[in-house]
Image 1 (spheres, rainbow, N blue to C red):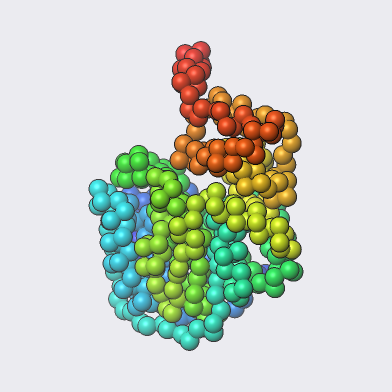
Image 2: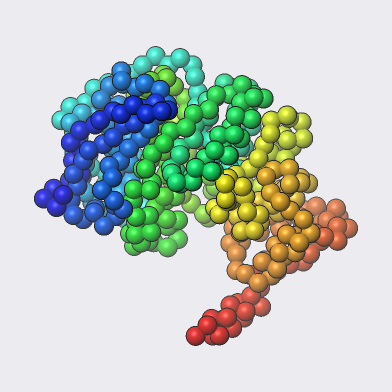
Length: 410
């Protein structure tokens, strides 16, 4: 691998599998990227159905998209024989947006191609929505209710490839949604995330992007470009025109930032596919309010999948992200137990203790507390929850506790 200056695609191989077709990418790359790759296993994308008639120029798109998420950080080029012209033409626009998001990083998206070809198709009117079961995706699904969208999940993105139990549970959940709504769902499996040393790439991002704009390689750089390009062969085969992605953070609500933003998503183009963001100006607590209200009048079995530590697809109800979601559901007068959490008075006391003894992101937690405060009269009479009205986030006492713990650990 070391003699190569660029990442070079040697060939693409299609293998039949139980669920469809596995696309395997054989490539060589320079030494500078090797320490960021976990193993010698090649990049693969596995899609449902037969894709034997998908043009090579489209089959190449996942390889280029995934490799760009690393090559731009290491200033390495990518070489392929051919590529869909629409995608190739979009790369310069994507580079400009990356550079505008991270002006001090000097990111360049370099792709060398021997030939390009327009791979347009006549859309059959079908639309797709990337769906993980999280708050953003669920809010987007509700927003698009009435449209015949197909639900796409990338196995290997949010859920690890080895987490078969969570995958089975998610498939069961999507099946229950389909039973009520009639919406089809599909899984696309890939090692596009797991093949890389994510922590090491996070260190590179910290150095290039700075602390304020770095939320890790996957969030800040990779997940949107990797996810959207991974589905290109499937989208071509099924002639999908419109793809939707649920928004992440409302820029007006929080300073938190990642690559899930309107400008970036709108600039992704290949074949005849276009991408749009849903709920761009809607904050997380508003989304949860929408979900709570929808649940009251709908038979769709909404079960939120938010936990980073979930086992077999079940929220732990005991981590910071679960706590945030639980409290937001309660603030919206909903019952967390209806949405996939296990909450009783003991859990509420754990949340109170957590907020009283830990430093938290006020960008996330202050809007939740403000929701309770805006409904003060209602919550003052609730003996189990009224503590949130007077709790001081990140109080000086918490800093003292942390300093004391640090001294005792020495």
